[in-house]
Length: 290
Image 1: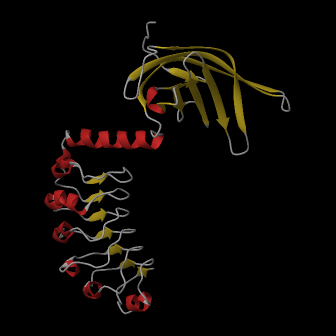
Image 2: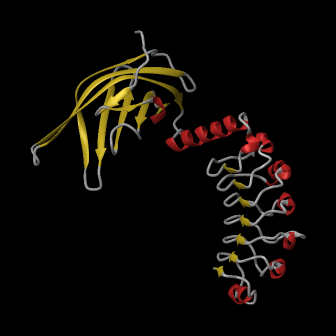
Image 3: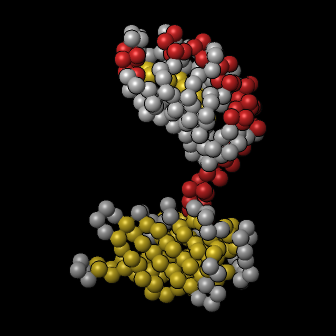
């Protein structure tokens, strides 16, 4: 079969491969299409060795419409595929939803070609989103990264900081939260001397990266939900305005905070510090805390 360029269409709203994932497990090819299909809807396609199952759903806050297949034709560019292969899937189908109580019939036509990478069972739309964001970062690093002042690399399940981060020398705001970064990875940040806001929340760190002490312009620091129990020598020299240090392993009120006269917002609940609120109240410049 000759697979020409095309896109699937649902209710005249186009759906392209970027809206779909393809997984292969249990001898079944599973295709799921989500955003962009039709408002509040998805399609699910399961392809077995000699048959297939195509389903479509439309959702609202009060109901789910399940479209039945009226007629359909599914064809693959190859029947010999495995994880990490690429595959083209041609779909020509008409789906119908009938609601006898409302005397309502809805018809959905799906026609076109999907080109997808075959992934394993663990692959998900979240994984796909993470891959796309990482790719966006690498593209940014090739196109005047010195002009970028704000960068988000959060929620990407990273266990490393890309080496290209050193190219973003004028960064003022950097979010590395919700990853799995080790303390050694932060040495790559030593060249970023213009950082004003930094988030390293949810990284399971048991100590504060020493590189942070060199950020002389740092005003806002977020270390929420790590395993940090103390601040290093020199921390009080930072001119922080806001510090989020909730849900760490501090057992006593850090003495370094008492000398930070620039600090205006301090959030430290969820540690193991007794009566920390009274200590904060002694810092007359604090405007907001928990």
